[in-house]
Image 1 (cartoon, rainbow, N blue to C red):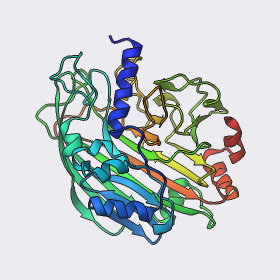
Image 2 (cartoon, rainbow, N blue to C red; image 1 turned 90 degrees about the horizontal axis):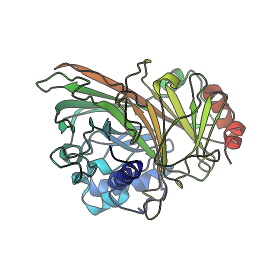
Image 3 (tube, one colour; image 1 turned 90 degrees about the vertical axis):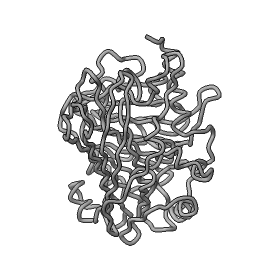
Image 4 (cartoon, rainbow, N blue to C red; image 1 turned 120 degrees about the horizontal axis):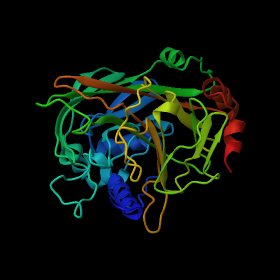
Amino acid sequence: MKNYRTQFLLFAVTLLWITGCNKISNEKGTFGSDLALLKEKSNPIILADNDKQIIVSAEYQGRVLTSTSKGLKGLSYGWFNKDIINSGTSKENISKIGGESRIWFGPDIGPNSVFFDPLKSEEEREIEAQKDLNTVPFKILEETKTSTKFGGQLNLENLKGFKFKIDVTRDISLLSNEDINDALKFKLPNTASVIGYNVTTTMKNIGSKNWSKESGLLSVWDLGCYHPTPKTRVIIPTKGALEKATVYFTELDSTRIQIKNNVLYYKADGAYLNKIGLKPAYTLPFFGSYSPELNLLTIIKFTFDGDTSYVNSHPVDTENQYGGDVTNVFNDGVIGDIGPFGPFYELETSSKAKELVVGETIAHSQEVYHVEGAKETLDGVLRAIFGVSIADVETALP
């Protein structure tokens, strides 16, 4: 087994691969400016309900690139890799583009990973997206003004040599105000600008063999990139008294993570390379982040039925390959001459690991809500949904 330092360097390479280059100039902009760039270099699709708008893409595998609640002049909530878009190489580097909702397949490390070339020796391997994850565009299967369905077929192979042939669909739909209030079980105030959308990813085994834990399983992994600010805090309510989160890459101290009254607070400032995760036993099906600089609350809801079988992507704690995390948070930063890569932070959710027989499917849904408004408005939303106040969030970490 590789030692910790080797594993850490491997993950440093992973992060460089995620973005494709170092120290990217991707400043926050308006939704309109992001849309103009994408129209110049690709074929984006806009789903819109008045000022509620999201940019999605078939050629980038059913990805949500960014969104806004305030129309073309509003803040663009999602982070995506503008350097790759500008370079003209995006169609050969789909896995590196980022965006508010992109599809990957876990785990990204270990013997069941599909992020290595299985034909290379252990000494030669570097983590990288396999060809189909970088080059296969999806097709538009259905489209309305507020929803679209994309689909594509991917061939992947894990390090054990098991070959996956999968059919993937991505259903993306804007949510009405009534839908948002029903989903959050709270009537959002008229003083807030709000957008919500649902992404449901369905993966079907269309190969010739049934999947098994012994040969390796895939999870549906939905990752969203967002703009960090110095005071951005991730808020994760937990089921029961959590003692510690899963910690990746670097150590954390009380200035970056705190657990108080069954709520985990994590600093997502884009200034310290780190990642955390939460195991099924402590998972509730929602979490989010708050940025006082942007007057923005982001809420993520996702499908979770209490199953305990999740793929494990930890670089060191590898004994149980199906004892992994349900949710993860990645924070960008610098270690030595590595990073930053955006900067950005990620809110991530995964499906359970399931042994799919030929023709069987697994679906994973993630809902994203952005609520923009004055501090007192967001305080009321935080209290209603997370059971904490803005004061709690702001004082949990220095």
